[in-house]
Image (cartoon, rainbow, N blue to C red; front, side, top):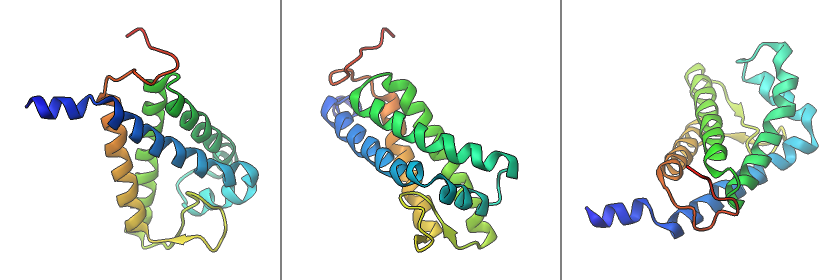
Length: 153
């Protein structure tokens, strides 16, 4: 049991996971920020948001990914950033699952907004669930050793 607790609250494991998730979200944001119209098209093709919200989502989501990725890596408002990242991962997983059930071949928009970036929905879903598990670990983990801004909680 002591070994489990040590792993659960390990500073270095938490840092590695923070780096993995943070870098992925930063990388994922780049193409979406530079080509918002293409990203809006991808969001629209999921057929989950009302048309009026598609452009707003295409403008806000990539910046949230970028800011939360940076904050997670730096350890600035780390718990808040991981909550937002986990919420985004849940939303992504639900959107992918709905389209998987519908049988839609997705242009994920995860890391590229290219129309050639077709993805296997089941692989995307499994990836997002895996990232969510890591995100839950970070939420539970109490390590602040590598945080630039220590929380007072």
